[in-house]
Amino acid sequence: MSSTTQVFRPLHPDDPSAMAGYRLAARLGAGGMGRVYLSHTQGGRPVAIKVVRPELAEDPEFRRRFRREVEAARRVRGAYTAELIDADADGTPPWLATLYVPGPALSEAVSRGGPLPVPAVLWLMAGVAEALQVIHAAGVVHRDLKPSNVLLAADGPRVIDFGISLASGVTASTALGATIGTPQYMAPEQAEAGEVTPATDVFALGQTAAYAALGEPLYGTGPGVSVLFRIVHSAPDLSRLPEELRPIIARCLAADPEERATPAEIVAWCRRHLPGDADDGPAVWREFAGPEVCVPAPVPNPTAQHTFPLVWRPPLEPEPQSRLPRGRRRTALIAAAAVTAGALLVTGLVWAGKATAGLRGAEASESKQHTAPAPAPASASASAPKSTSTGPAAGAPAPGPSTPAASTPAPSGPPAPVPYAGLELEEDNSIAIKEPVRRADRTGDLRLTCDHSLCDLTSDTSVITLLDAKASGTLDTCRKDLEHADERKVAMSLAAAGSQFCVKHPSGDIALFVLQLKQITPLTDGPHWVTGDLTIWRAS
Image (cartoon, rainbow, N blue to C red):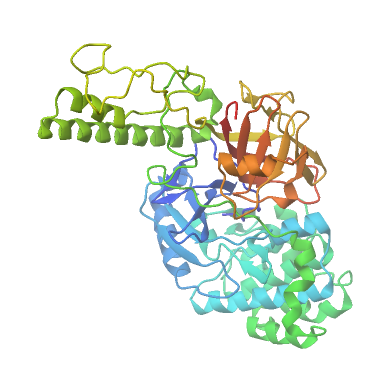
């Protein structure tokens, strides 16, 4: 499976919400073997879940290869690899989980920022060579090492998808048959469908390093057959490479596998030729990796946690299902069913208790008043008497010290929060505080306004503030934060998953927007978007 680029996209309507107990938070990408999703372990550590395509899953031969390669990959443990932590080759569909690496692929970084400087290439080669040492020691040959399978984390490179290419059956046709790999990064013996050994990965490392230094494949582009012909029948042109890199890359690209450098030799050579303090290596490429990736928070269990306070309110205006993105409707329905089941259980227990205790008459009336589902609305008349459905006479409370007088005012209480989950805000739509909340145009109160990779949450009508990270998103907190505020714009660069924005509408409504996902790609013109949950307190 190809590498995932560091792009968090909402789940599609046909995506699962969970896989083997892992709740899926976002879609990362897709490759030849299937789709890749972001999830988290029980302890909250991000993982990449790779789910096999249905047509491959139905192939018994694929399952056999996949099972063999997964078992081999389980043995790989190294500082420069994305460790395989879980898998089920016999699942429906088969899947595997690796530790998530918060950094772009080498191919993406070079495409965005151009060739890497010599020190960065040396650190890249040393890190990938160390990863190959671990992979080969586990009895695994990568077979498909290339720039998109090398991720640039803040502390060094990570090699991914080791050994899995054999299971996926990704092939490149040649004049001499068919073999596994990507043409621009294959060794001559691999191109000729010959024996694949650890030296094959070393050749691919040399080509990957050359790509990092040149910004393009060393053997050029074009039809796969043409590229493979050049690899098999011509020596590489190293004259375009920086002089400092030519000796070690030449050793990697020797036509005879026996003459190629070993991964251990590559590590030692690169360390000797690195300038300055070797411990400062990762800093040389951080500018190419871009800003630190903000990983979305784990998806909560809908039956155990709630984004909004669980406050009952009469379903006078049911929330249209169309307000929710299609990818989240299943989660919303599960949460609603759980809440309804809980309410029925509590109601059953209350009435069972009444029957057991033999409550009658006024005691039943009193019990019902204490378990009333919601306070009277603030707009209700303060002098309106409470009514009961039980008692000696309908409409007339029974006498006694426990019965409130008819003139007792009904409690007003704070306004009930009205939640709107999973709102997506892009550069061509908006969110309104008044109904309808989701707007397909820019006429709403909250908009995402971007200039290249700099985006702001803006409004022409409402005041916006960004709560402190430790603040609780409540009505009282927003009231205090908005009391002396007058800003109508907040930079999204200050926000991450879980950030909370307070909004005050001229009508008096107060809203809380909780950021869930943010896709604002550095150094590009888009697409940029965010998703979040909105809570509105009407007439606050």
